[in-house]
Length: 491
Image 1: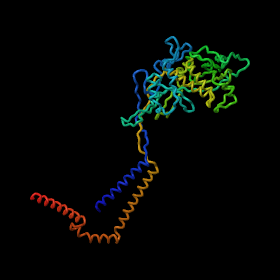
Image 2: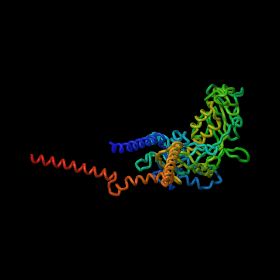
Image 3: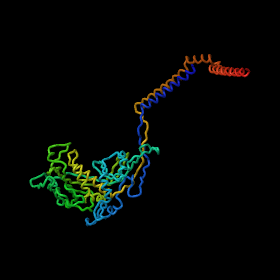
């Protein structure tokens, strides 16, 4: 029993200590994801056959634009060929790859500006399989105080399950890519375009047919109550003109003209609110005034904008699904003409008119800011058919693994306890070393040697006695078994 107890007590203590330590670890630690990066940066080249690349993040003008990008502008601008974003092969002017461009305009203008790896890619893949979306989206991001609308491939930010290759559940790509962006700055020009409130001189035909004259400059004037005479998409209440400053005065510029930045005026009359009822009311922090939005009768409101758009060559890096670095340099005038041309000939007018309807509603965003984004997004979408996805400049793989984290307080508590325990053990060792030479300890050692010394030397110490007794018991049992076996055999 004594021997058994000697074994049970240490076992119980070790089991208790093990259980306590295990529970402490569960209470004080938790799992956290850690992102690992491939240290090698390489060119990312995963092109597929055909025109488009499913995962390529960069964008470049397609081959048919080489002539536009390199040819010098002739003296007679109006006789120069149209930019490559327009197509006249069928005898009718249209945007190049119209099904692609208008699909981007209708479904490709993204509201996301970060965390692109968290997009619902299942829904995106389903839309692509049904031909309801394209590989390009128009993403608007604020960089350096300017909103840039740029070409972006959402598939390039998708995360995959890399568990099979020991890369964790979130296996994706970080990269540096080249693309093109458009940034538009607009200011209100309602007064400059001579759009005023209803006067007795105006001709009020009926509630839905008003005379709304405007005059922004000599080459750009008309009546917003009538359908424009030019433009491929003609919306009543909408008129737009691109111009250049010649001899200090604005003059209309031809579609073939190359300029970066380029300027344009817009005059619009929308049937969205009655501005007269809002003159003295501030709704959500925005109060229309006569310089921005004016009541022209019949529940129509009118305004005008003077805008300047700049086309940029952009190099950006996408880290963990969000923009990290963003460098924009002004593109060449030839490249700017590719983006400008579809807008200038009148495509996208209905889309812009819908944006004007929303911008004129009472809200906390100025009309000029809302329309600036709309112009950039529409211009980029209409020109998207003239750009192809391309390889990333640099790319690296990224994956996430789960590790265990210990909070600071429990960690330092454990360190302090271990240090105290170590110091206690060291102190006890030093004390033992110092006390072993004291007279009292030497006396105890001498008495033990007198009591157990002879027995140890003769092999009859406590341990030897226990071993001898155990062997005698085993021999006695064996003898008894042998005697019983002999008696059984003789009987």
